Length: 201
Image 1: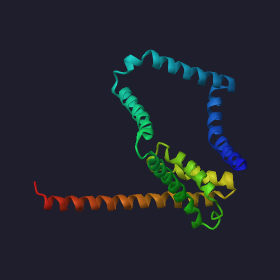
Image 2: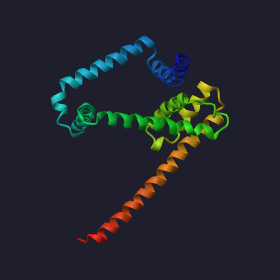
Image 3: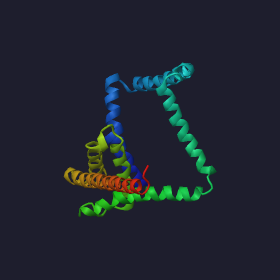
């Protein structure tokens, strides 16, 4: 387990956070100065937000962000208040289990990656999630880049093989999503038309 965590930690450190840190440190000219600026900026930001909290509350965007945060916190609180909370938690865990399973099953499409385990599927899900969260449409490009590099760095696969897995995983999911959305849309149209015929205004 610790070896697994070390590999994944090394990937995130060397391939993502390391290069980002080097660029920022290079721009500011030193590690100490970099951290002073980071910590100082964060403290200054918090102090400014606190001092101007009443004025900022007038802006619609700030109110929207505040409402979103409040909604998330209220949603978390309701988990402990709902009557069937254990069923809710179980279904949530099942959803994440199938997310991992969906990511892992793709490895069997390629002979070289078929030896990867369910735990490796968790890693691919996390790495792919970072790519999907990038500010690009549906993670196109970002997902492929980071997932392929993850397979290269952690498992010593070739970049071509890593890219092949990323394409299979991303495009199969995208195609399935498009098909299911199209089917759902058509069903909604048919059912709405049927309802209109049976219950005219």
